Length: 142
Image (cartoon, rainbow, N blue to C red; front, side, top):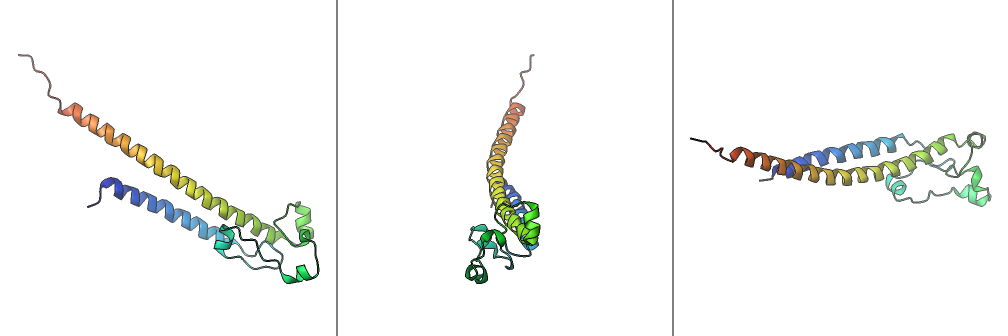
């Protein structure tokens, strides 16, 4: 038989993990293209593991400067529009957002783990102390 603490932990941690998974897949589904001009959406694990996107062979063969096709580079809004990289720039930001959300989810779960156990032990100590107070017999003067 499982203890109440274990049950509460599993249920609450499960809800946190399900929420994090929903956020990850929702963010991933919103990405329409890759961060390089004319490239498709990259695999989720490639994004998480920071695998560099493959550069189309056309750009390499033609020796086109990366600032014309790589939306990950720093550029102004005007440069993004001039180079027709709007969707690819958005994809690069969304990929970074997925990695940030995953890291945030891990940090939140670690903080929750610590807080859950601290609060649980505090509540158990408080309940134990309050039950001791009620069980002490009162002196009766005769």
